[in-house]
Structures are given as structure tokens and as C-alpha cells.
Image (cartoon, protein in one colour):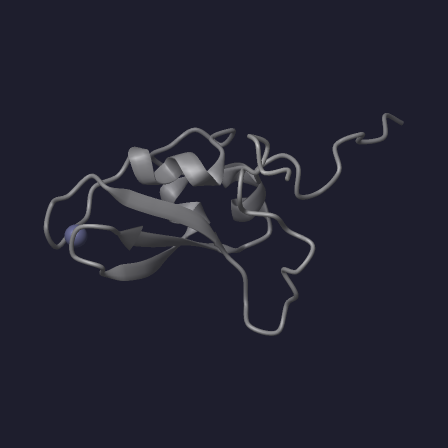
Length: 96
Ligand SMILES: [Zn+2]
């Protein structure tokens, strides 16, 4: 059995992974500041399963203002800790 060497938090979760777990994707429009969550299984019908969740926002449009400045991230249920996840890319010159 091949063990996964990727540590959780280093690689972004994919749409297919969220869909398999029955999770939702949180979408937020930068232009009109509207946000909504969509079931990952719904998005998976239109988008590739191996698409990293942070890139989903680039493939969709805001349904309210039609803007394309949409951010996306996994929508974890309340109570589930996300402390171990690092959403910032952080790899560029953050050291002092
Ligand atoms: Zn919008």
C-alpha cells in the first residue's frame, strides 16, 4: 500500500475530495461581497475533480453581479478545527 507522503495542509484539497466527503465549497465575490456555499457534488458535475478548491473561484462567475473575482475555499462545518490548515501560501520572504 502506498502511503501518502503529502502532509495535510501543504497541498490544497481538490474538488473531488470535498465531493467524496459530502462537503461544501464556500464562494465569495470580491466585487459585491456576497458569499454562498455550494455542495461540492454540484460543482463536480461541471468542473474537473482534480481541480484544487482555491482555483474553483476562477472558473465560476458571481450570480449576482456577474463578476469573476470570486474566491473559493472548502467550507468546513462548524466545530471542526481548521487550526492545522494553512491557507496562506507563505513561502515568499516572510522570514525576518
Ligand atoms: Zn458579485
